[in-house]
Amino acid sequence: MPKDVLRKIPVLPEKFNKEEMMKKILDNIDVITEVRAIVATQPRLSGIGKKTPEILEIPIGGVDDMNQIVKFADSILGKDININDVFSEGQYVDVAAVTKGKGWQGVVKRFNVKILPKWHKHRKGYRRIGAIGPQNPALAFTTPRPGQMGLHKRTEYNKRILRIGMNGAEVTPSSGFPHYGVIKART
Image 1 (cartoon, rainbow, N blue to C red):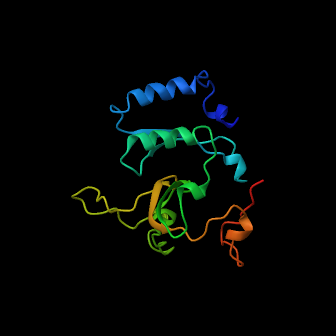
Image 2: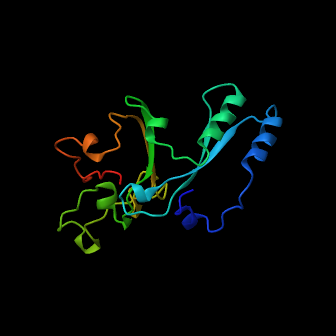
Image 3: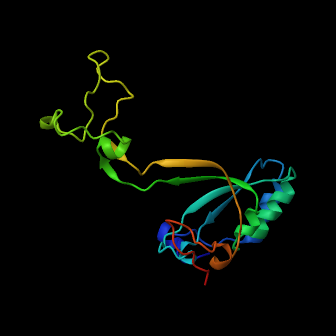
């Protein structure tokens, strides 16, 4: 188990006998409906400066035979799983992440509202909307208002995996990735 898991889980469970646990599982195989693996990322190997791992629970499937699923889970227990074991080139995936947080922003930055002319309502401000809306309803939900910008969960669907490699040089195009930087090789 990676040493950085202690950053996320300060007290790890006591060691257990793997053979006894597998015997109990195989004795009750007809009751088991789903097998899940608790995995941890190793961000120290990525070169992004992060050290605290993410703990994930991933269901194991692919076949209908529960004996094969349990044996596969037993075979990967305590081992590193590479990206080649999970994904393949040309496969489509959904990518979920959190956008960059920008804090509390006004309507010009948040919704790209046009800046008012300096001569029109300038005493009330010009980096705002001209009118909030009619008297009834009091405030339309479509009216741009200032508020939190960024730090929202966004999901992009059907992204195709073009190339998978263990070295940053073999996946980086000759022109580089704009607005990203250099992909470092694993050490």
